[in-house]
Image (cartoon, rainbow, N blue to C red; front, side):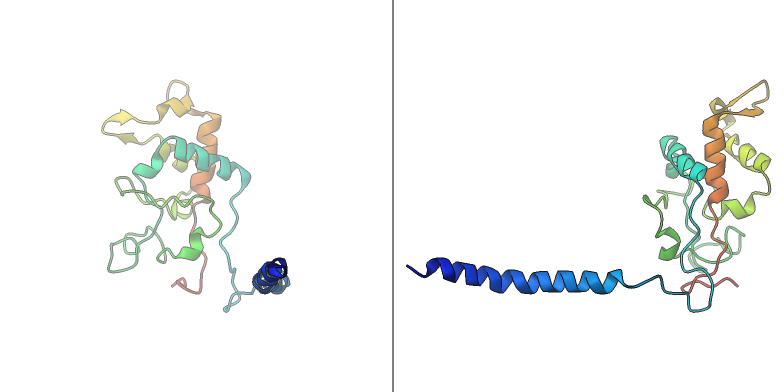
Length: 178
């Protein structure tokens, strides 16, 4: 029993030292790596969202838009998204890699928004889409003021910025643009 302490310390060292070596060694190797360029020379990651679009994402979530709209272009054979001009290519995992919360949507009652920033021609188009009457009711008129809902609130401006930032018009190795 006199050497029991040394036996326990030896067992701990035999377990801890290889573990620390693996973790520290891997960290040293991966920290020295930079971003790899895309094979075809294009961007490797989707573009970053501008600041106002990040705030608009919170408005989008708070209004529950994700329960009616999806944000994924389905591949050919799984829906008519590409044929219906909702996107030029199907959505892939790389499209969502920079998003803190991926908003794919529960069901598609409203139109798909994955490529909405490309489809909307101007700010007015975005604001009209937000004001779109669903079931004969002005669903989001509270985001606007004025007699004809022509003055957008700060929340409406942020939501419009988020909708304009939804673009999948770049090529990726998994789904090149055609």
